[in-house]
Structures are given as structure tokens and as C-alpha cells.
Length: 583
Image (cartoon, rainbow, N blue to C red; front, side, top):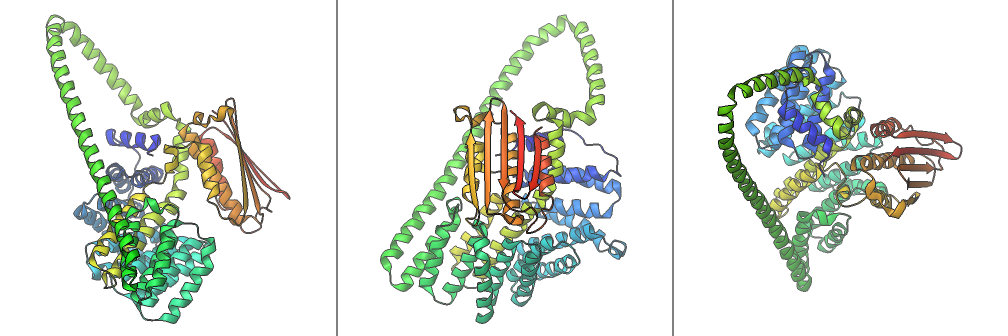
């Protein structure tokens, strides 16, 4: 679901000019946050417009790091729009700066990260264009620069993508070294999912190199991390790697077991191309074992799913065509109506020309005065009418943390993970139709990465979404949830309030699981008249496992953004967070 906030920001920035002092780096950061948010929800055309404005401010500021960052980001937007030549031009401008001696003399951490991100984006673009030599060179440049960073989590992500690109280029030895670095940095930053992903890739590469002992060692590392992994995409990556290894080594029956695990993953129905690929490979495996009955049944499932996907695409195309036709009909009717109205008004203008001229002059004068006064405030004035100025400011401030964690992981992590599998299969381990299906799967995952807002809010209440989220948490900790509302009418809670309460619950539960020594979390939510009260309590000793980081501050900002009170108390009996908001 597209949020009202992002839609209004897009409309405002597409229809107005943004003026800001060249030295104000906060304005550049704000524009970049807005552009990344628009890109993450699929409004890439709007993201490119905002990105151009960010580039203008960055060039006026004269800050080389900001210029590199804005051009590199714009290259990503243009590449997503299919404008490869324009993307290359944007990357070239950034390269001109980072290859200068002055820029490389004493780069700070921000500059190092911008350089590494630029090179890895160039590597992915070159690999998409089948320019493997340039792709490998840029990937290694990225790896060299990110090794100078102090951010272990970012290093893990970029090292993983470097390894994936090198795998696609056929340089397996180098790829294995970078995946090993990704694994160690993920462990150092307590990113078990990143470590799990890197271990799965390294296992696959070791097998491709014929090193069975190393492959088994990495398989054991994956299995030791698996109890802590809940991400469907991470588990999917591991099972697909195991399937590829089994099929390559002729272990058809073992491969069938992994295919069953893939088909039983939560949310697999939302990945129809992955299911289609599984059915096709199951059919081949059953046929190789001589089990022709099951081979036939899985082939029928594959054909049925293929027809379903095709029918869905036809329905969507027909719906788009219908909408376009109805829009044209409406525009035509409006044009006829306007023409008739213009004819009528023409006679009125003839008799009242002088009066209308004076009125027009007066209106133009008033309009110009108002526009000059309100030009700098128009963006927040429109937002204030819907959700308030404070919500907009605090939403943008809190966006950076989630953007780095989710956008980089989904776009530069998962999508390129699947790309590496595609390249492995292309090297001779499956048939050509399967390669095309994996490529389609990669496109589907990229679309999924854009859906940062929980899709449950399109058809469920805050009570149902929280209940569903808590039911999916690890069984290692006991979670209880109690809710009550008059007539069970949770639809009274607005979407913007529901989203922030949901994020607060996610942050609080995540902190309790990761940083607390307790074994129980109790969550209550009551709606009484116009007051909604949310309480999250755990029985662990605060800080027993590790520090909470920026999680508490993030929850406070979210509560403030919806004018809610936020209280957090800690003691020997655990931590209690209370949020109260007027509906």
C-alpha cells in the first residue's frame, strides 16, 4: 500500500521547485531520503526527479562526497527505469570525482562507503550487460574500498554482493574469499541472517570447485545458524543451493526432499516463479528415478501454475487497457463540456470585458503575492492538512536507519543473491528454460523488495497484523498478546497510527529477543473510547545480552510522530514500554 506521505511528497516535488542554500547539507540529505523512499515503493520515475534536485543542491554545495553520492543514487534510479545510457553518464560523473587525487587523499567513512557503493553498482550494471571483465574489476574495487570501512554490517553486505558478482563472472576462487569475508563481518555485527546467506553461497562455490570437505564444513555452519533464521528468502537461498548441489551430483532423491522444504516455506505462494521452477525440477528428478507417476503429477502442477501466471498477466493487462480506455472517454467528455462552457462564457466576456479584466488583474496580483509568501512552505502546508508537519519531519528523520537496513539488504542482497544462482545454472547445471525462470524470479524479488510497508494493512486491522506478526516469532521465547476494543472495532485506528504502532511492536519485540535475558514477553492493546493504550513488557534483565543501540530512540520518534505519549521503565522484573495515543 502506498503511503499518503510518500504520495504527497512525490506530487509536491514534481510540481514545485525546491530552493535551498547550497551550503545546507541537511536539504541534500532530506531529498536523498525522499528519493530512496519513492524508489523503495516503486515510484522510480518520481525518485529520479527528486534525485535530479538533490544533484543540483549537491553541485552548488561543492561537497565532493555529496556529489558522488547523489550521482551514484541517480544511476540506480535510471538503471531501474531501463535508461542504461543515462545511468552510465551519471556513474561517469561520480567516477570523475572519486578517481581524482584530491578526493582520495584523506577520505572519511562516508566517502569510503559512497565509493564502495558506486563501484558495486557499476559491477552489477556491467554484469547485466554481460561485460564480465569490467564487472569483475569494479567488484574488486568495491571490495578494496569497503574493507577500509568501520561498519561491519555494511562490509558484510557489500562483500556478499562482490562475491555474487565474481561468481557470475566465473571467478569462483575470488568469490569464495569475499563470501568468507561477508560471513565473518556478519558474525561480528550480530547479523546471523547475513552470515547464513554468506555460508550458503560459500558452500555452493566450494562444491562447484570440487572441494567437498569445504562444502561440508560450510553446510555445518549453515545448519548451526538455521534455528535462528526466520526469513523465507534466506531459507529459500540455502535450500536452492542444496538442490543445485544434489542435482549436479546425481542425488535426485535428496534433491526432492529440499524441493519439498521450499514448497512448504511461509509465503512461497507469493513467489509463483519459484514454485514453477521447483515443479519443473521435481519433474526431472522423479523421471530420473523412474517414478513416472509423480513426474507426471508434478508436470501437471507446473503447467497449471504456468497457465495461472499467464492468465493473471492477461487479466492485469486487460484491466490496464480498460482503465486507459475509460480515462480517455472521461477526458473526451470533459473536453466537450469545456468547449460548450467556453462558448457560453465568450458571450458573457463580450459584455463584461472591462469588469473581468479588472478582476483578473486583481486575482493575478493577489495570487502572486500569496505564491511568493508561501513558496517555501507549500510542501509542509499540504502535508500538515493531512497528517501534520511534525509527522513529516520525524518520519524523514527516522527513515535513514530502515532504508540502510532494508533497501540495501533487499535490493543489493537478495536480488543479487538470486542472480548468482542464475549464473551458476547458466554454467551448465540446468536447462535453458530454467535459466529464464530464475531470471524472472529475480525480477519478482526486486518488486517484492519495493514493498517496505506491510501489505497486511490493505486488508487487516492493526489488531490482526500484530497478532499475525507475533505468531511468526521464534518459539525460543514465550509471547502472549491480549487486545480489547468496543465491538472489536479496530478499523477506527487510522493507517498512519497503525503503521507506527506496528513498527514500535516490531522494535520492542526484536530488542527483547536479541538483547534481553528473559523468556517471556507480554503485549496488551486496549481501545477505550478515543484512547488507545499499547503495553509491551518482558521479564529479562535490561542489557543482559548487549546494548539496545538506537532502538529506543527510534520508538520515541515514532510515538512523537503520531502525537502519542511514550514511557519506558526498567527494573529487576524486566522492561515495560507504554504508548498512549488519542484516536
